[in-house]
Image (cartoon, rainbow, N blue to C red; front, top):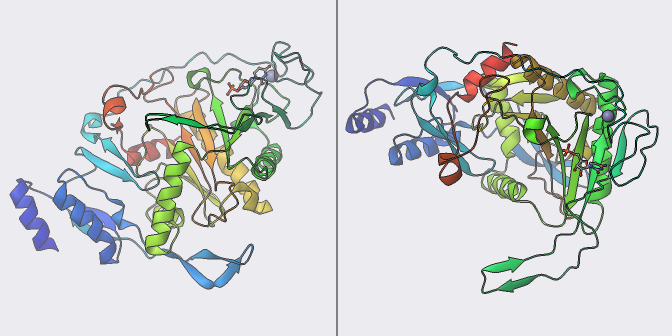
Length: 419
Ligand code: H2U
Ligand code: ZN
């Protein structure tokens, strides 16, 4: 192996090498080696994932379906890599959506230069008479909110989708294609208190929010027309949130949305090829290395994913294989509330500002199939880059070619762990 590397490195004029973690199972690394041979700037492959989670037919879960069973990950070992991929430009593969991210760490070689600007975070009152989400207030359509004391769910008054959409589609020349999209949009208020956020809510109150998410997923997913339920929170004006009152949205619809379709295909392909769960394997890989772990509790893990695109993007993963929020046991629901609170609190501390983000859960489609390939997770996509006011834009090269980042996932995780 090393001779192979040396020959290739010489041919490419590369001097020096670095050690990276990889699987003790050499065949798992071959994909990476092949890729490096074809593409000299590609390093840090996902070929170093370990097949440490497998489907054991004798284990039966849920409705009699065999479920993947995970074993402790073997300790990481090292192999030589041709160059210092933590410093040189390279691209990383996102095995969850099948896309690449360009990483340019040399641009951040200099010490951290962004200053921490204190953005004027306006103090919010506990109750805002102008807020359309506060208890007892009138919404835009004239409906009045009840005097709710915990969580509150209502149908979005300006829903992007309607359940009674006519079901015929149309098409012309394979170029102009229209499909009906029946669906239902809801809003979930996390708390009656206008000035709370996930980071400063009480764990018991947050647990109730987790229960509402799980119930909504089950209720909406059981509707015959609904094949996907997307729960998401836009936080902060920078991410388009219309109101600081703690709330999220749920859009549930008939078609499988783009991102979910990509993740379904990738997880299915992984399971088909290896008989394991992609995100079980990834969670164990990250637990073994700890390099990108930001928060952890009994049931959940927050990591800056190896393939992160946004500067401080994170992925929240249940340690146990579970396809949706409805499958989480009571203790795991507490665990989810806890990890969300701790993750968002870290974000808020990073630039000493209520951190803007779009966050959402990805779970199995609700089309009636078991979707055992699906591993529940939450993505946090925060736009901030260097301070409370300096954000990353996905423009230019990113819109036209490939998304790019400077700060590596490893450095981002280190910075989040430090606050
Ligand atoms: P955002 O903050 O993420 O925009 O969510 C707020 C949602 O609340 C938004 O989708 C809805 C908007 O349509 N809304 C109502 O349903 N009723 C209102 O009176 C105002 C806003
Ligand atoms: Zn309010």
